[in-house]
Image 1: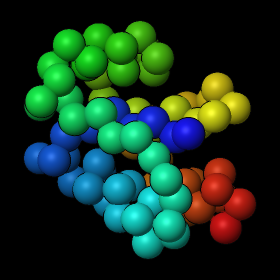
Image 2 (image 1 turned 90 degrees about the vertical axis):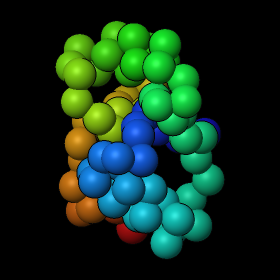
Image 3 (image 1 turned 135 degrees about the vertical axis):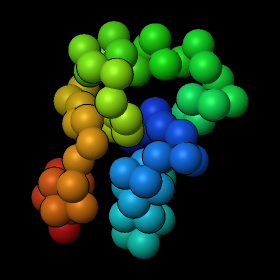
Amino acid sequence: MITMYGADWCGDCRRAKGVFDREGVEYTYVDLVAQPDAAVIAEEISGRKNIPVVVFPDGTHMVEPSNNELLAKLGR
């Protein structure tokens, strides 16, 4: 399962969610506004404070990925 750490005020987060939704990809969304303590987890994963942080089942992650980067990772 893909996990995405983000916030609804973040344009890149909304864009990444849109890619997953359009492609029919299941993912877990961790809302950092509703769960502010999870921001520490996202930062530990990425080493950065930028969002979204997208974690893939193979253990890799992306920070602020473009649509094309997400689609490539999804094999689309």
